[in-house]
Image 1 (cartoon, rainbow, N blue to C red):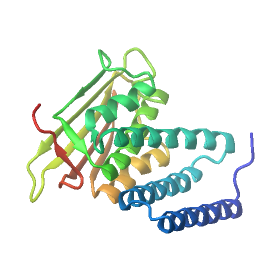
Image 2 (image 1 turned 90 degrees about the vertical axis):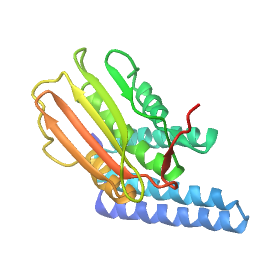
Image 3 (image 1 turned 90 degrees about the horizontal axis):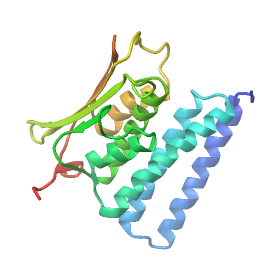
Length: 231
């Protein structure tokens, strides 16, 4: 087992990341990159810094930490690919594409249901992190580990003022002996604190006897997302 990263080393790494990100921002400004590109890269860099800093606190073994970090960054890359294709991300596609990466396919054990919702860039990036953590937790500890497990993901739009509320429910069933974790890891921080901070969302994590349940609700003005027009 490799030694845990010391506070001094962690501080030095974070300082290097900050300096490197600053150099990239200066380069973008100097070469007159399009405003939308600058905005998206700044948002991505901010998310990357948050992922790295939060992950380091919960994965002291260097090899394990690196593997989980790479997995999270690949998830972010997949979401960027979806954004680049159309500029918006379909909510159903965001769930389906991330879950299929972990061999969770729609069918008897996985159900996705809800209206057609299109998410804007920042919302899709942030929500993609939550979807990734839910998927990984399911295949490592939850309904994705055995033949009896089932995952139901549903979402709906509720009346709100001045904008509608998007409410998402992730529910795992078919398990036994489910109990809350003994500590709050990075995944829990993403699902709770990061969603509250970045989306101004309401969140609930519940550990039922037969499975895990997660609820996420946030306001959806046009710059966050919209209901797709009927085809």
